[in-house]
Figure 1 (cartoon, each protein chain N blue to C red):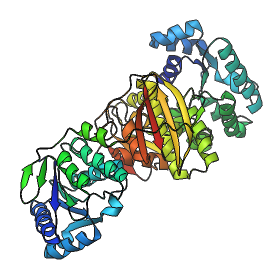
Figure 2 (figure 1 turned 90 degrees about the vertical axis):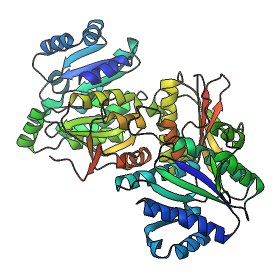
Figure 3 (figure 1 turned 60 degrees about the vertical axis):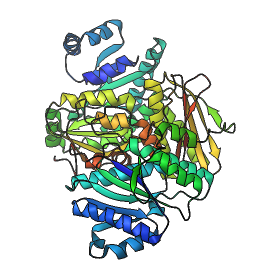
Figure 4 (figure 1 turned 90 degrees about the horizontal axis):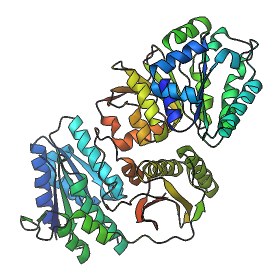
Amino acid sequence: MTSFVRHGLSRGRKVVLFDAGDDVDAFASRLAGSDDDIAKALARGQLEIKSAREAYIPDGAFDAERMLATARSERERALAAGYRAASFTGDMRWRLTDPPGCEQLAEYEQRLAEILGDEAIMLLCQYDDAVRAEVTAAHDVDVAPELAPIGRCGYLAAALTGSGSRVRLAGELDFEAAATVAAVIDERGDAPICLDLADLEYVDVAGLRALRGSKRHPIAIATPSDAVQRLVGLLGWDTDPGVQFQPECAA
Amino acid sequence: MSLRHDAFLYDSDDSFVAQMSSHLQAGLGAGAHAVAITTQHNLGLLRDSLAADADSVSYVDRDEWYRHPANVLAGFERVVRDADAAGAPCVYAIGEVRFGTTPCEWDRWTAYEATIDRALAGRKLQVICPYDERVLPGAVLDSAWATHQHVITDARRPSPDYTDAATVIRAHTPLPEPLPQLRTLQEPTCAHGLRELLAAEMAADGVPNAAACDMLLAAGEVFANATCHGGGATSLRVGRVGTHFVCEIADAGEGLDDPLAGYLPPRPAQANGAGLWVARQATSATELLRSDAGGLTVRLWT
């Protein structure tokens, strides 16, 4: 998530982060303490941290129209303040409580991407291990369905799923997002990584390379999309011993 | 054992069979993969003469193989990689180029021959390019001496006329036409914007899906190069030229004066520089021009 935020900041965007924790101020100081650039961005207002619960479900229910209005006004504020664009990242843990209105989420994400318009928005949905386990146990919900609508809007969505070893990407991965993705992969350390790329509709050379992090991390690719297969073939990754292909990622 | 890339000038079936069968048999004897890419007629001659070894050789119709120079380089690269993966020490190949019938085609494939020594340098490949003196024009036969370090006639000897690849390619690459009919579009601010714009133009123009996807890939790489190394894209022009959809992206950089750019297959550990390779593979032609402001203009053809 830090790498996502840093990417937005470095590209001159306003970044709004909706945190799911109960104490937003404490989260903000932890984040500021971990990184100088982030501390400075917080101080000058380029990065704002808000409560996900208050934004998404202020009265206990999710309302797509209300949240879209919030997104619109956040974007206008960002542009008025001189930023090139706005990036949003929302911690979706509030979903676990299955609040009313949840069924509007897919449509909301699709329309959000439309509102934010010409400037590509990146939505990074990180589901950590505990959340994933809880989601599965409590609701038997797969995280994948929420990602697909974002992908169809032509942007990049990413999720860490499974035991954190599975990275699911949907939408379009190009050189502009490559550094962010490489940082996410690097954060996995030496742990094995399986990439679920069935919904990656576009990928370029920098994007494909980013999937191996900055150190040519060995990876497994499951269900590559046509776009992934095409580029894998052109770059000869299909005979690269560092890249395995398998029918699916282990759960 | 690294790359060996010879020309072989022949004027009879007997001479072809004698030289080429022994080349393939030498490969088989060394445990190498043996590949023959030539005319149907010559494939038949080889099969007959190889007798017991015939089934150990892969046969490819050269009309299928020599369609697009950049793809042929990738094809040889793949043949070598596959052999390596199968544990073979190297590949022994015959590659009889289909030079075509027009001066324009002769130039195109002569330029291709010139790229081989650089593009496949270091590869475990022993390839001989037969030139049929009975049918090829004098200009093409002469070019074999410029594009191969060794030429086989009655014997194998170093070519006194071997010429630097860039020089040969420049001499055989026509100057790109101006194409005033292309329409100037507003430069997109991001890669996603470029793809949306191009996709809409190609859909309106009826470009088939596979060709459109490849164009988006190629244009994306050129745009990435312009953004990351060329000081940003300064102009975007598109339009139909004959049966092709053309997309032209100019940048504000220092230009690129390397006729081999995009012809060297990316190595696995290479950190960057594969964008033009991908562009050349994914388009029927990728032309590099000097833009008015001195930057690089890349013109892509579906």
